[in-house]
Image (cartoon, rainbow, N blue to C red; front, side, top):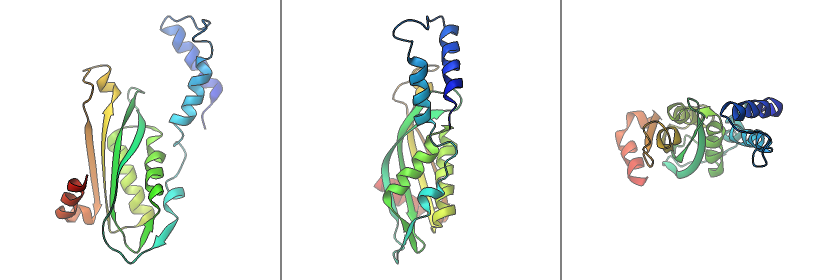
Length: 183
C-alpha cells in the first residue's frame, strides 16, 4: 500500500529541485496524479502469486503448454524508468493445470514492483514451480528498457531477452528448442 501523502510531498520536492514552479496550472495536480499512478505501477508489492496459482484443474495431459506474448510493464529499480515487453511461459503439467489468465496475473504480480528483468524472469518461474508443481517450466522475457532508450546510451528499440528453465526444461534441450520455435 502506497503512502499517498509522502509520495505527493516527494513529488513537490522533486519538481522544486529541478527548478519547476509547483504552483503553475499544469503542475498543481501532478503530485496527486503521481500518487495515484504509483498505486497502479507498484500494485504488485505485497501480493503473492499463490493467489493466482493455487486454483488448479486436474489433467491427464503431460504435453507442454505455452502462453506467449503476455504484455507486461515494469519499473527499473535502478533508474525508476519503465521497461516493457512480452513474457512467454511454457510448462509441462504434472497432473494439474492452471487457468490461462492466471499465468498473466502471475506476470503482473511480479512486474508491478521496482524490479530488474533478470529477477522478474526467475520469480515467475520459481512461483510456477512452487505453486503449480509442474514437471518443468521455462520463462522467456523480452523488453525495451527506457533507462537505455531515452537516457545514457540512448539506443531506442534495443531489446533485452532473458530466459530461465526449471525441471524438465533444464534437462531436455529439445523442450527448450520447441519453445524457441513456437515463440
